[in-house]
Length: 230
Ligand SMILES: *[C@@H]1O[C@H](CO)[C@@H](O)[C@H](O)[C@H]1NC(C)=O
Ligand SMILES: [Zn+2]
Image (tube, rainbow, N blue to C red; front, side, top):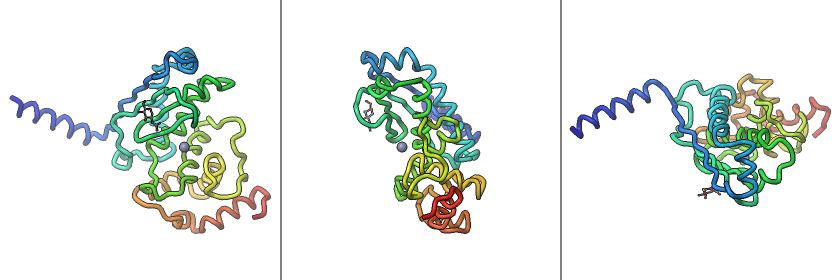
């Protein structure tokens, strides 16, 4: 009998993987529910919204940002958990397949906290699913891709870098996101293609492989387009 169930289970798992359903189990846990930030989370955002938006953002990252319609290209995640945690420091942090959001940050945020939370999750969920060359990619580039998702989803916060700003291509966050947007204008799907190349390794030459120009030249032309001489 046990063997029979094992057989059924194997068939079931195989059919799941062959159908290409990359079913992620989305969970959200408010570990700070008795704190002011945790209470604000419950009143203004809530667990049901969080789980729903996790799915929406995950699909946006797969289809629009990373363009991974083939599940074989996607990072495999079985369960992703968003924890609302009481800690001071980074607003939110991705660790493995999970994300911690600071209740202290949610408490102090001035403005539409649900919008801000959604913006943050665009960044952090990108971290969960992007490739980083197995740790070889520059941190600034990894952060840039995460902010690029915010930008493309219209969740760029007030004060997000303007096109053409910044000092270095790998400065990170919104500066690198704007540069990636420029690269995407030269080679459609640039970010998706670069991410695909970054699955197992990183080489700055990937920029040249994709655009025909070294990254330093791209950066100079980008700056020049916006009237900045470097
Ligand atoms: C995030 O929160 C979880 C759950 O309490 C904790 O176990 C983990 O260490 C935290 N991770 C980071 C990177 O702070
Ligand atoms: Zn980040």
